[in-house]
Length: 170
Image 1: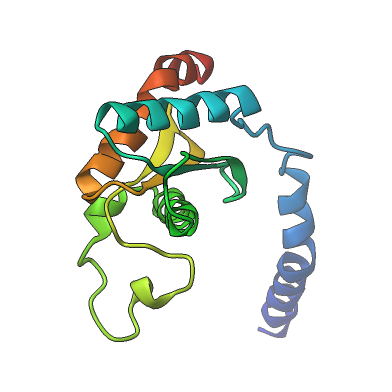
Image 2 (image 1 turned 30 degrees about the vertical axis):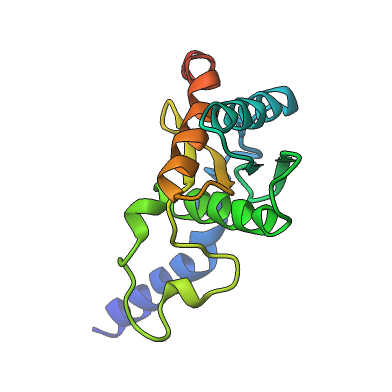
């Protein structure tokens, strides 16, 4: 009985001490992370602005990388300054939740819900940039009189490079 107790204690101590070390040995030294190129981000932003111009509106667009950092930010000539902050928040929210911002509206009710967190915007016009099972970031558009147009322009930005992203992700 005493021998079993000692053996159990030795096994437990070995597991506690060596477990993390053995697990670390199976971990890779680094991870390959796919990121948008600057040219791709600029192409997306310009396509979003071009689409909104066809709709007769001036907007701001923000393309964020997968870490939530601005990679391309453009504001058309007559878009108001506030559209810059809103487009960033929409892109950030879409990137963080991996979901179009329109799908998040009303999802978090309550006085202290998610929409109360700085930088989160539960309003249509933000889309995650997803291809081949990889998140590349988010795109947000602000400035159209209705947020459905913002989303249409954001989608135009994604559509312009989506095939290239899909093919490169394989």
